[in-house]
Length: 197
Picture 1 (cartoon, rainbow, N blue to C red):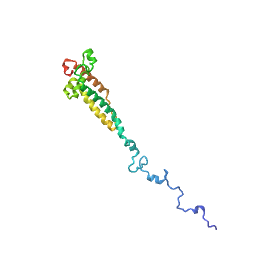
Picture 2: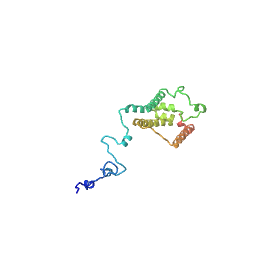
Picture 3: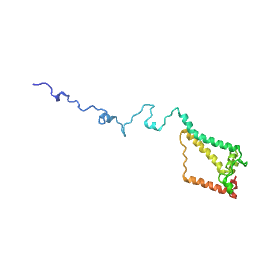
Picture 4: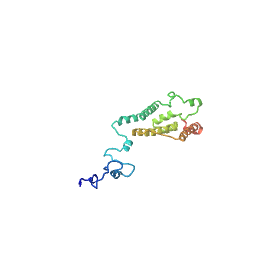
């Protein structure tokens, strides 16, 4: 009688011949560790931004100073040019003849255009006489204040690194054109002499 165990008897009855659970998609450990939802989500260590946050928040470096100066160069250059022009008009009085050329429309037709009196308006505005500035050219004087508001907005947005976008619907442009046309017609009529320079 042979007492050697058979190959089937050599294995204990409670042993499992299946491969050990691993990181594969069919293992029980994977099913238990996967969170509910579209996919696994890892938590980055403290101080490391997530990929979404890294894309949305630009990295701040010490070289922001020169970049900011480049962004501010255009609005500051425009301000310098406008300030230089106003300084010249404030020094050379347009009320005295011979300093500035005459408006071609006024010279040929005798009619005032929307810009007639603008230099006198600027001269009075620089010297702080708002009444004389409005009397010389009300539209130009309103334009000085509008320019100041837009320029400050431009400077603030350039400082923050945001572009200045002013988009007006075509109706606004038609409205501005109609206003200038009405202003031109009224200031040339006898009852609108208050709007004439």
